[in-house]
Image (cartoon, rainbow, N blue to C red; front, side, top):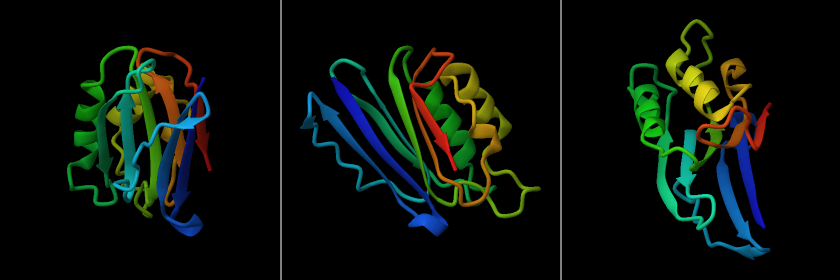
Length: 144
C-alpha cells in the first residue's frame, strides 16, 4: 500500500511544502527539503516509487519564465507516471490582472492529469495534486 502525505502552505499558513512517501507503512525516505516558494513537482513510477524528476517553479515573478519551464517539465513526464504538485508560499501574484501561472499550464494539468481546481487559485493559496499522467480524474486534489 502506497501513502503520500503532502503539505502545501500559503504565505499566511507557514509558507512551506513537504512530501512524505510511505510504502506498506515504511517511510520511503523521500527528501523534500529542496522544496521552495511556488510550485513543487515530483514525478515517480507508481510501482517502484523511483523518482523520475523533481522541480520547483517560482512563478511569483511573471517574467521569470518559470511557468513555461513548468509546462516543459510536465510534458517530459511519461504516460502513467504519478505527479505530485505542492504549492508553497506565493503560487500567484497578488495582482489578479497578472496571472503568473499561464493558461497553458492550467489547461495541461486539466487535460493530462485531471486537475479541476488549478485554474481557480489565487495569491497565497495552498494547492496539492496527486495524479497519474493520462488520468481524467486526480487521485487527490485540494485547494484552499
